[in-house]
Length: 537
Ligand SMILES: Cc1cc2nc3c(=O)[nH]c(=O)nc-3n(C[C@H](O)[C@H](O)[C@H](O)COP(=O)(O)OP(=O)(O)OC[C@H]3O[C@@H](n4cnc5c(N)ncnc54)[C@H](O)[C@@H]3O)c2cc1C
Image 1 (tube, rainbow, N blue to C red):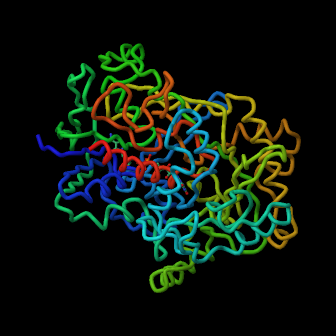
Image 2: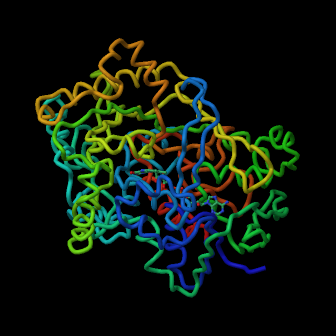
Image 3: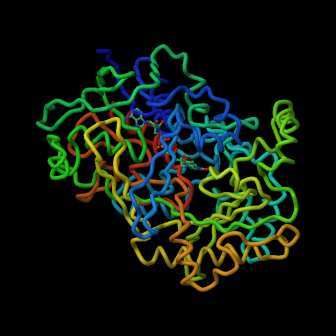
């Protein structure tokens, strides 16, 4: 059995940070286990390749929820990255931190050290902001944050339309104020995706004290009885091309397999709700009823409109014929259509003036989207899509083991719209989206509304539309929540409650979903975890 000081499970947004930062200390050995392949594929690095990543059989877990009762019984597609960089290698590169109040809320729930004031230094430490450093931004960090090199004119028109609709123009959603409309900043460097792997891991792969093993899936956390009578994590069992192997952790096992697979691994290892584990025939070594519970995600719905001007990104014959020119432009200048991150413009708005902070987010895509861009015939036409999501849903879902086979994903019950307030927010969101798209600045482009379609007008009709068409915007969190109550899975130092030598460090630890995209917050969590792990030494 090989042995390391730290074994990190999962080489995604958080896992790459942990492996990179912990191996800065030459006296510490670190092993990173990643289920997917290395991140060599060009579709990862060329931003527009995200369209391919959405369908990739080998670099995407291609998960689905169980039938969702409030969404007409549909099973929703849940893509997750499966390669070095994890979901940061397939995401839309939008650089957003959430609202300062989100972190103050974590602190108020008992998560000492997680207020916005506490976490801001870690956002800054991770960042290389191309606009330069200021009170809110850092330079010199591994995660490059850039302005879009070639935003589509539709995205710029959307921003103007948002201002016409009464929202402030916002150049920096991660600065003093989140509210407003503007173009996203993106995690790109020199026109290429800057995943957590590219930013943190690739530059340090040659360190002798860092071992990265890809194509291996952790199947169980190995434990023994520790000094204080509590279970202690001693290593990890993993599957390598059908052979079971083990790796020993002298100091800690760090679970960073993401919001779906970290709780699954805990359950497979006997850490979870005692009764549920017993039902699966798994011996419970630590009763933690919160494992897999508290699942939260951003449910999203789109208003899709045809474009009269032929400027949108599409797979129509004209654009395809110009393909070689676009490729040449990308290869020689690293700009043009291939640098698009899909969702180019953003809005953080209040569904109602009574709201204290924005509760809805827009993502504007200068393309006609259906089924996560996987419906290629729909993508042939000229058009644009305005996504809207409810930033702080009250609905809670859960995960459970579908089987004891570690190679099978768990059953996902997102339980979207199970809280009536979430339905109301989505309906308001569609109305706001339509209002923005009907402004004069969109007039030169505006064709027929394709979705929901002109016939859908009343609140009841819009609600039906939401139930039939809403999808995930890919931000599941909360399934190993940090906290102090009986449903907490990790404490504020991210140690699994009642188990020694084991932490969870990824999006699953968020007690509540932040009001924004979740990649930068997950990287911040891992940066902060590194300091806590070092302090423990
Ligand atoms: C399509 C898509 C678009 C998104 N767009 C954005 C965006 O534009 N901006 C933004 O901020 N956020 C975005 N997100 C969300 C963001 O990328 C995630 O919240 C973030 O990457 C989560 O990081 P993580 O470390 O928790 O998990 P992940 O990055 O998913 O990493 C988990 C890793 O663990 C590996 N793994 C899982 N199980 C095992 C196992 N048993 N053994 C070994 N390895 C294992 C996985 O293969 C994966 O590499 C998007 C996500 C997706 C999927």
